[in-house]
Image (tube, rainbow over all chains, first blue to last red; front, side):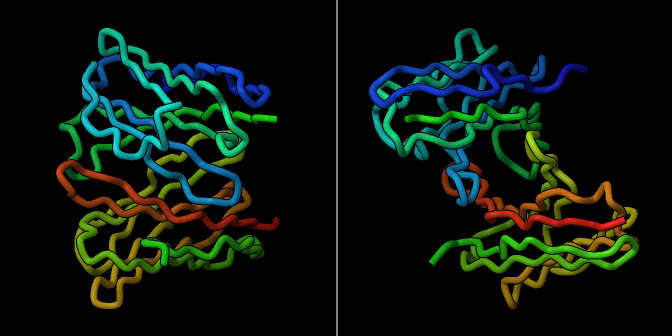
Length: 117
Length: 112
């Protein structure tokens, strides 16, 4: 079974540019999560999809971030325009179970390392 | 004050040692307590989770929760070089939907 995949693995862009990160969850997983880890800090929740619907986007830092999940399959996270403080590792995770609940196991992707210069 | 505090380490131990990793938390609403392991350039992988105070064992790993002290621990017995990784504690609670709060992670090195 293929795991969660993320693309690209690393992105270096200049401040003001646009970047789009992609996440392909494990096939059949309804729940998809985005997290971010800024250097030296803890992993923080960004948002949660159940199929194609945003269940919780309370962790999105501001309106420069836009997440979509077309058809309930893969998801994209766009940052436009990127700022220096957006640098970090963006993780995607998916899970098969009920939205939330006891730790239905979240399977994490390897992350996309974003560097904004 | 952070909701979850975890010493970032690094923690270096010889092979075969017993490792103790700890987190403290401040939010009494936390319901589930989890430990993730993260190897370099990989995503976190769920190791164990517990719900109530007490111990839960899985092979060489034991998770311990003390809700009265708001303190959780992960013990690794007979540590191996392959255990070298970052260990993250995480807490899950319901607030209109379930949220997961992570600790900063402790880097562990097990020397052969």
